[in-house]
Amino acid sequence: MFKKILIANRGEIAVRIIRACRELGIKAVAVFSEIDRKGLHVRMADEAYSIGPSPSVESYLNIEKLIEVAKKAKCEGIHPGYGFLAENPLFARKIENEGLVFIGPPATAIELLGDKMAARKTMKNVGITVVPGTEEPLESEKQGLSIAQKIGFPILIKAAGGGGGKGMRIVRNEKDLKEAMRACASEAKSAFADARIYIEKYLERPRHIEIQILGDKFGEVIYLGERECSIQRRHQKVIEESPSPIVDEKIRMKMGETAVKAAKAAGYHNAGTMEFLVDSDKKFYFLEANTRLQVEHPVTEMVTGIDIAKEQIKIASGLPLSYKQKEISWRGAAIECRIYAEDPENNFLPSTGVVSYYQEPAGPGIRVDSGLYEGCEVPIYYDPIIGKLITWGKNRDEAIQRMRRALSEYRISGVATTIPFHILVMENEKFLQGDLSTHFIEEEFNRGRKVQPEEDVYKMAALFSALVKYQETKRVQTRKGLKVQGENPWKMEGRRRGLRRFGV
Image 1: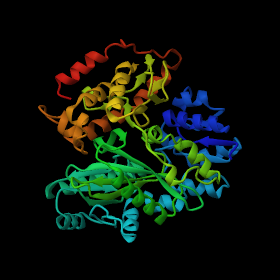
Image 2: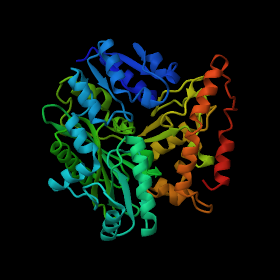
Image 3: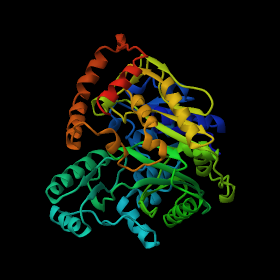
C-alpha cells in the first residue's frame, strides 16, 4: 500500500480523495493555484504545494510541475481526480516513466477508450452495438455533409478527445452543418488541445445510462450496477440516480456484462464507466467510456456500500479486487444533485464571488461532497461545480423526499447556485414517475418562454471568460481587504418563486 500520494486536482474531488487516503492511513499531498491558496483541500491535506498562477493551463494542467512536486514530496503515486488531466494519456505515461504510479487505468487504455472514435471501433470489433456514426475524424466540410446525408439528420457532431459536453453540437439540417463543424473543432481544440471531430446519429429522446466498473491488474473486472444520467443541460449531467427507474435485473446483468467485455477488450484496470444510450424499446448502444472516477460515483457507493475511491488506490497499489461479482448487491436508491455556481435565472451563466454564508444539510441518508466553507472564494477559472448533494432511501420515493428536504436546508449565499432549480426538478411530475430522457430539461422547463439559442449561450460564456483578466487584477488589488458580498441566506424561496414565474 502507498504511504503518500499526490492529488492533482482541487475542490470537492480533492477533498473526497483526501478523506479516502485518511481512512487508508495514507498521507495526502495537495497542490494549489494562486487563487486556491486557502482552499479546503489545501487545509485538509497533510502537505500542500503551490503550482502556479490561477489559470489551469499554468497550474493544474502543468504536467512537469505536478510531477516535480510529487517527487519533491516523495510521493509514490498521483491521483488525478476527474477533469483536468484525468483522461490525458500523456500525463499517465509521464508518471509511469518517472517511476511513479498513476492511480487510474494504464495509458494504453486511456488512449484507446479516451479517444471516442478508437473506442467505437474497438467495441464494434468485439461485437458491441454502437450508435451509428464514423470511426475516423472528419477532414472536410464536404466529407461531413456526405456522411450526414448517409446517416440522416439529426446528427451529433462530437469532439474525439474530450467529454463533459464540450465540443458537441446537434445538427438538424444541412444549412447548419458547416458552422457547427467549425464551432465544435474550435471548442475541442481550446478545451482538449485536440481539434478532431466526428459524427454520430442523434437519437431522439434516449435515456443515458452508464455502468460503473472496477478492474484489477490481474485481469478481473466487475460491474457495480447502473446510474441513470438522463437529466442533462447542454449535454452536461445535472442529476444522477441509481438504480435507473427502467432497469430490471435482466437488463442490468446484460449491460453489466457488456461493460465488462468492453473493459477487457481495452486491457482496462482501475475504476471506469461505460456509457450507453437506451431507446424506447430498451435496446442499448455503447456511447463512450470514461477512464476515470466519475463525478456521480457517490450514488453507486450509496447503493452498493463500496468505496470506489479507496478501491482505486488499492488497485493501483497492486492489490486484487476486494470483491467478486457474486458479492455485489444493491440496496435502496440514491440520487445526486450536482450543485453548480451558476445562475438559473440567467441562462445558467457561471456565478463567482465569496461565499458569505454556508450551511450544509444533514440527517439520515444525506451526504454532501463539497470544497466550500464560509468565506471561501468561488473563482472564474474552473468548472462551476462546487459540490454534490446525495441522498439515499430504502426506495426511490424516499430518496426523492430526502433530497427535497436536504435541498430546502442547503444554504449557500454570496454566489448564485442551482439549488432552486433542483428543487423544481424534485417536484416535477414526470421526474417523480421516472419518465426521463436526455431532453427532460428542454421539454419540462423551457415551455411557455422563448428559449435562448445555444449559440447565444456560448457567446455569453465567451464574453464572461473575457472578464477573467479584469477580475483577477481587481482581486489582486483588493486582496488584503477583500469584501464579502452579503446575501440574506433565506432568499432561496424568493428565487424559487422567481424561477416559477419565468417558467424555468
